[in-house]
Length: 458
Image (cartoon, rainbow, N blue to C red):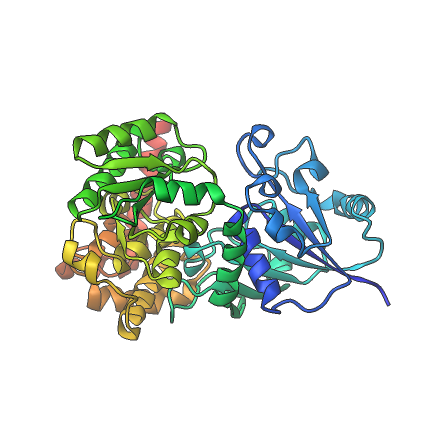
């Protein structure tokens, strides 16, 4: 009987910690070998530390028999841009089996973001292997961002995810009927505790930022949204300043800023100066640790961010007060509409209090079931508007939501142009609502667009 080898693919320490928690909780069947395949998807992986070089990784290492590098396996290709050509798949599978000493092993895969490389390439390479997908955060509550090849999608057995919003079921991969399974919060917290044990520097940071009157700092989370083209550098600097000003207005005088690992160093200096002007002290957390490790070690009195998944782990798993900043601006600016960041942004904006609302920040708690049901209905409408071809079955749910719940507040989650292109309620004024459904009008509109394009070409 052939050996069974489980291959777990991870591109982030957060993902590796999620896998470790799933293993500890017994969510994977026993196997003869367990391999962790590390992939570095950074733009310049040659100068960017990979998962196995991150602080705290040693605490996760013992759960796997061996750690492999996908970058080294496919060098000189970049993991984000390479996949095997169909005719070359048998050759690549033989090569990888030889390189990783797999022989004739039965392979089982656990990957993240199966719709894109490198996870997609790995699934294509092992053509008959069953696949489990694990969620990397709030994005799992939204639609699959690209159409998945049925030869891969039909092999997916389940979606593993953390219970970031209790009662909310992920939409990801439901087009294939993939069931979801929770990674227990207790197991994840245990893994984070292991990662935190080796982070003595964070204890020093906490004591350096604490006083008798303010023993716990406010933790500010940077995301580097300008790198994604969502904001300009200047606009993101302003978002960070809003974090500082908002935290100070709430009474916090000790602030800790956790920048994105590749964010410009000058941002920290700008925020330090801003804090000083307001009579506060800001300390930089320059060690590239998980936000959850910072929660464990610093025990912050408040966590402030834009739409980071860490806001929900802070609130739901650690019971820390949280506040959002800049989500209204981002909802207006995010493009194209199907950008996968839209779902985390929508969840954070809909659930968490704005930092300017002091009473809401102080009294916020995880939402009741009714509120979660409202959010689920909103996300079905947003999900259909994002990916109507992948989720045509959500049209009725989207129409029902837009018909009954579209108001000045919920308009922030939709774009009139998008609703018009999909013939959804809200596309045009009520008295003209027959137009998007009128076949003759649509045909004339398509003809007019075609003539316009032809005229431009001339």
